[in-house]
Length: 314
View (tube, rainbow, N blue to C red):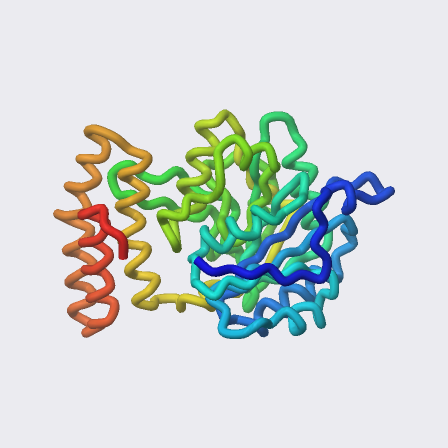
């Protein structure tokens, strides 16, 4: 791995960030994989936030050039970490976390737009006793009155799948009550620093997809609560880097679904999942893709399944 940190300012002491307002320092971290314009749009929205005690970090993942000047033209005090190697979602975020000085760490996708009050609401939630992490309400950028995320259901031990609560629903206030949930959403999640110090960084073994679910399992096992906070909201453009139904997405979702189950379910529960996956889930997906002639996704499905079942790297 070859990395180079380039920043407008490189503080070595978190106290340098703390201001007379008494606001906790929040480190915002976003990972850009060759989506400069999209990331700059996020930085534009961060620049408009009323919350002032922020450290913003962009991890330029798999960068082809040093885009620091472009980022800083949208947010002058942004810190930039350039990685010439694509470290994946978890690896990129972990690069940023290692440089973060904040009392709270806010991981956010680069294909999002933030709204005022977001940071205040998430900090207030994470300051509650026992709360370790929280995600905001997430709505679609193109249809901002439609919900994408209002919490997750627990992963089903048989199917290895779960659902986003409220997804596709018109937002009429039906999900405006804060509540504990099994998992945060990887597109936007705030954590207390002490949580990361206790459970460790985001698991890089996943590279892409399922990493936040696995991390949340670790966080809950460590005794922390995970919350959905509807007083905070972002708009999500979704799947800009990987595509909504790309072979890359198919491959990693398939492989990491198996990996997640292997890491978090044991004995008969894991055996039942593997039987379900091999006897029902995999054949069903295979024939659906074959019927429509989607050979690229068909190959990705098979490659992901073989890697997951063999416990191999892609």
